[in-house]
Length: 76
Image (cartoon, rainbow, N blue to C red):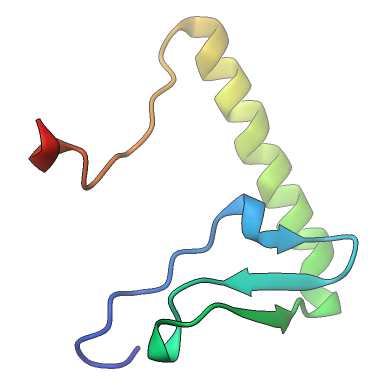
């Protein structure tokens, strides 16, 4: 991480499993970039995403689902 730069956050929608790419937003120079998704990470990452999806669906069914909105509070 570059000093003074916020950490890059990876979102599920930024991962393109079909084409083996990850889209990075706000990288060096505040530019977006496409980087290759390492082949050895595809299956572990798919399993992780699926486990989070299952957990989210469980939380929805129980009425306990929520999201973290770090910058929403200052707008209230």
